[in-house]
Length: 456
Image (cartoon, rainbow, N blue to C red; front, side):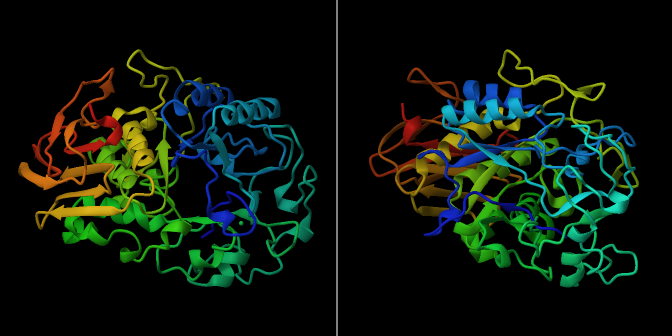
C-alpha cells in the first residue's frame, strides 16, 4: 500500500494545491506509455486547441528491462536510476516535449517513482533502459547512487520482508510491496501512492502538506453508482464529494480510472469503469467533468488482448503497442481517433467536449439539481452550463430549469458546434431559463450537456 502524490508545486499560501495550469484550463490527461515525441505533437495539434491543461506522463527515469513476461507495463515502475531514458524516449526528447508542450500552455506532470527501486528478484547486470549496472539483491544502485544503507530492510519487522498485513501502518511504510526494494523515506535525500479506500492504516490526509492526493474512492464509488450495484442510484449524488466521505475538494485529484485499476489492480475492484465499458464510461467521465469536486484527470489508454481465466485477466501485464519492444507511434485516423492500438479516450467527442464544458463553467456553483427519485438526474453550474443524465431503464422527458440565458444551444455530447451550426441535438432554452429534455434509455450516449459557448 504505497502512496501516489500529485506533487504539483511546493511553496507558501497553499500553492501546493494549485495544479498551475494555464488560466481557464481545468483538466489534465494521462497519456499512458506514450512516446515523448508523440506527446509533444499531441500538445501542439490537439491538447492545447481543445483546452487541456496538462499531461501526466509515464515514469521518465531509467528502469529495469523485464523480459518475462515480455516488456510489461509495470517495468516502468522498476527504477534503476534517475537518468531520463526509457522506452518513451531519451533525455533530449523529454526536454523537447516539456518545452514544446509548455510553449502552447500544456503543463507536464511526472509519475515519479521515488519510494522504491526495482524488484529484489530482478537479476543483477546492465539490462536497463540506459544500460546502468544495478544489483537489487545487494541493494546496489550505483547510478543514483544507493546502497544498502538507503533501504528499509533493517526496519521491516516481517519474516519475509514483504508487507504481510496491510492494516499495519509500520509494515506499509517499512516493508516491500510485491518484492520492490523499499527506500528509507525518512532520510532527507530519499523521499513519496496514496491508495486510501477509507479502511487503510495510513490516510491520504497525512500527505496533504505535500500537495493534492489521489482520491481512489471517487472512481470506485462512481462505478458502483452507474452500474447500479448494491441499490445505488444516481439521485444519491446530490451531495457527491465530501458528502460521500471524500477528502476536501481542494486537496483531491480525481479520476474515473487509472492505468492500474483499469487492469483490476490498485483499488476499486470490479466497479471501476474503463474504456471497455464505453457507454457507462463516457457517462462517468462526463459527470466527473461537469461536477465541481476535485481536480480532474482523464485517462488515455491502449488496447490489449484480454484473456479471462477464473475471472482474472491473465494478460493484464501486457505493455504498450510495440514492435520488438519499441513503442509504436500514435497514429491519427481521418475521424481524429487513434490507430496502432491506442484508445485515446481523450479524443472521444463526448470526453473532449466535456473537458471544454469544465473550462467554461469553472468557478460556478453547483445549482438546479433535479432527480426523478431514481437514475435520472440533472444539475447546472451557475448560468454557464447544464447537464442531464438518464441511467434508468425507461425514457426521460422533462422540462427543467437550466439557469442559462434564453437561446438555442448545441448538445456537446451528440455533436459539435461548428461555424455556428450544431451537428447534434439542439436544446431550446426559454426566457425563464427552462428547457425540455428527451433522452431514450437506449441512446448510445444517454446524457445531454449544454454550456455558454455551445449557444448558437
